[in-house]
Image 1: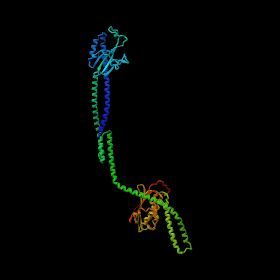
Image 2: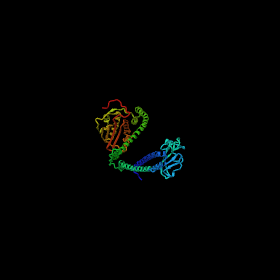
Image 3: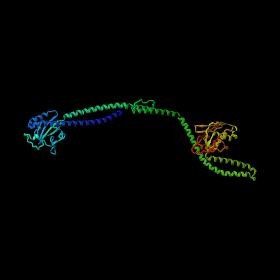
Image 4: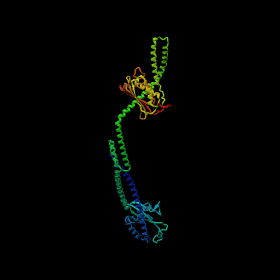
Length: 530
């Protein structure tokens, strides 16, 4: 069974109030009972004093009959149970209950023990010490007040008395007062307290229930309803609690959360629409980075290998060339063998060029950078190679950015890269064509050089291999190291090379070099290229 928040709160507060109210009622009733008891004892003491004083004259005159009649009349008062007089020997000399007259009381019995301690009489006992509460033979609760009758001077000088002046106490007047009226008052008061407690408890419970429902339960139900709507994906509804207390702040925070969730969902939906394009783009970038990383690791490992091989081949190759030249120039050589020696020398020189290319590939020289203009470096390259025969039927189209900023580069190494790129472009167009050279700035991060030819293009199968050492499609016309060396130079400059190609349409190489010096760069002094 589910117990609501209001019920739990009401029950808890009601129990706490009940405990405190019961404790308060107990203290209140106990205090009232003590006060009424003290008042009853005080009234009994005053009644005893009044009886003693009013019968004093009759006792001096030894008019006991009149004295007893007066005590009998007093005994008929409301609340007085009975009155008795006990002499010093413990004999009841008078009682409003006739069957007690003449009976002796033990000093330990009620009526005597209040004035005696260890069988010795108390000359002056307090009111409370002289009172006792007990149940009489009829089962009624009564309070008895024993008051000593002292042997005053008038008593032992009276002619009718034979008491010795040394005797301090003549007897005891014992007044027994019923506590029925007090018990009735306490019972009525207790009933009123119980009624008021129940009434107050009900009133407080109803007040707490109403207040909690209005101030707590109703806003919480609104929050719960809104939470269920949020769980179903409804983000349009907002809470309308305008109170300035904590519940109002909670509602406002909940509305802000709903608004944030709605904005987040819209953003997620927007991201979802563009996710496929972003994933494709990111996948392409990751593949490109992986390809570059693999290629860089391959070039480094291969460079170390070919460096050792090139040095080992270079020494015997130098000997072959030297002795071949000496033999060809010797007069003793048969003229028929000179053509053969020429072939040997030509092939040995070809091997020497390959070895030098291997050494250039393996030698990662540190770029000596200084501020330079890529436009000027490209123009110097075109002047250097533009008169070669392969470019006679090729048209160069220049599209330079006029305000291209200077960047830190090694001009000689960048010129070597441009030479390799232009030679490859020229060799891909044996029947002529055009080469478009474009320079521009990208994202205020790179200076870019784009070289586009209208040659035969590169197949998709070979496109991923063109930067690998010794890869070539020129049969015996090249060693396949030009693009590998260019790739290494651009990488050491902190840049990158991108290539796009379509068969029979042409190829585009894009070289990107950073605008600003990289970590670890050392710039050399020098004037920028003009």
